[in-house]
Amino acid sequence: MTPQLSASEARVLAALVEKSVATPQYYPMTVNAIMLAANQKSSRNPVMALTEGEVGAALHALEQHRLVARDDFGGRVPKWRHHVHNQLLLKAPVMAVLATLMLRGPQTLSELRANAAPLGGPPEIEGVTAALQDLADRAQPLAVLLPRAAGQSSSRYAHTLCGAPEVAAAQIAAPPGEAAPRLSLAELAERLQALEARVAELEGRLPQ
Image (cartoon, rainbow, N blue to C red; front, top):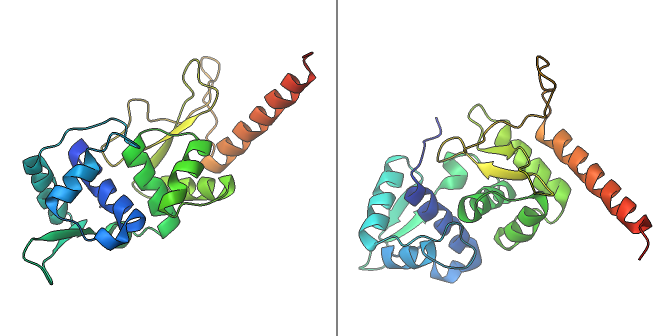
C-alpha cells in the first residue's frame, strides 16, 4: 500500500531523489544537506523553510514507510538515501517525473519534459506521457491529470502522494445529465497536443 505523505515528507523524499541524480558525489546526504536541498528557492513550488528538526522528523517517518534508510557506513555523521524505486516499483524515468511533480507542483507536459530531464526523465513528450500513464494506472494512482483552469492554455498533472489534489478528477465537461467520457492520460494528452497544433496553425494564418 502506498503511504500518504505530509508536505514536508514529500519534499524531503523528492530532494533525496533529485540530488541522488544531480549530485551523486554528495549522496547519500546528511540531515543538514537534505534541509538545504528541501529549502532551495529555485526549482521548488512552494518554497519551504523546513528546520533541521522537521527534516529529521520527516526522515524518520519516511523510514517507517521504508522509503528512506540511514547509511552509517564510513562516517561519523549519519547519512540518508532513498528507496523510492524499490518501494514504489518505479523505473528511473518514471521516478524522475514523479519527483519533479513533488518538487515543482502541478506541471504541463512540456514543463515536465524540460524539468524532469536533468533527473533522467524522458526526453520526448511521448515518454513523459507514458511515464504519467504508468503513475496513473496503479491500484493507488500516483498522478492525475487536472482539468484545465480558466486562463490556462495547457492542462497540468499533479502527484497524489500527499492525497488527492484540490481538483483530482480528470474529466471532460459534459452537458447536465450526461456522464463525462472516461479517457486515459495518453488519450487526453493526444487530444491536447492536437488542439495546441490546431491553435498554432490558426494563429499562423492571421495577418502579421
